[in-house]
Length: 441
Image (tube, rainbow, N blue to C red; front, side):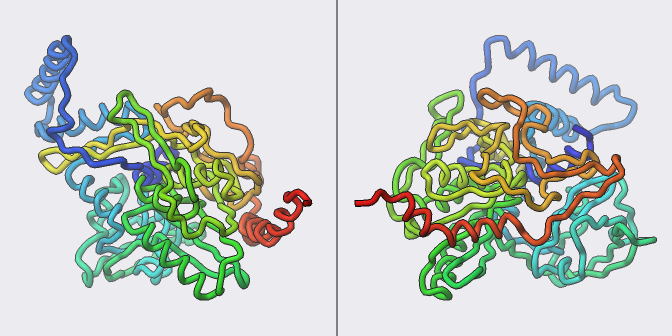
């Protein structure tokens, strides 16, 4: 996979870490193998040599941090060492609130690319769009700037201003924007009524408030419709989040039985979650929308509902992230995001590097999960060092019909939202299917 493809996927990887707990640094220390001293000496020898003899002065802190970063990133795409500032950003993301402009960014073509502005944020209100490049922050070029350094410059105290220059495809030159930072609350739930009796809820990610906000949204839909004859749960482009929230969401719709379980190297990594029996919406007909951007926690929910025959999954094969990460804080404020287990759906399916196939394959928005340079949908199996799934083989089916530009053709955008249209059609036909499937007395 190209360097730009890795960077495009980086944001998804950060958000899609499914956490099963926070471990203290002392608790994380384990006895090393008998031959460990030899290898530890080699590490410290190299550290000392580089610190003493490298052509330029490099701090021990930077050398250790970089060594840890290399160690973790070579394990798998989702394990990582986080510097103190990165650890704090991670915590802020899971809490769902911060002061700033309200944009998700990554690095592409050596510049800062806007992945998505958050609805109602200063960035969205100013008209910034996905695919825009931020080429300057204040008077400094963003060429070569890391996404973390860009976040530091863009975020700040609410009420303060920041000047940026933005280039958009089709513009002859960048345009200046002056934005006022504001408190940003990530709205993970969006809901609306489709037709009378039919509701729609989109979960954008799983943070600490997702389950509570979903309950509120469902109550609002019930109030607006009297009762729900059907519900569309949209998990498209949902990169995941917190494991406990995925379990809580599943528990609203599944009356009994397992929700998810995990397996690792030892008993401490084994975990199982089951329905509590309090599902308020166990009888509401459901369709679930998934695509290549549906990863991690969203795949846990989709897999649970599919295995329990609780919903019809519609769309495209999901991302295929079937691993579990835990966050281990360290003494200096830094932390590890470490893969400790793989998770399995209620039926025991290992979806690692394979994803979840929809019950009804319907093509949709071709830009979801798309790497513009390679013109293909990026999934877990495309990432370097990814964990192998059980019986992993070449992916089959579920791809969007995308024609590479280097063949002189443009992508064909579908009219409207065919996946959502199909989801509503299925719900409206639900009574007829139930009647046809019920044996005559």
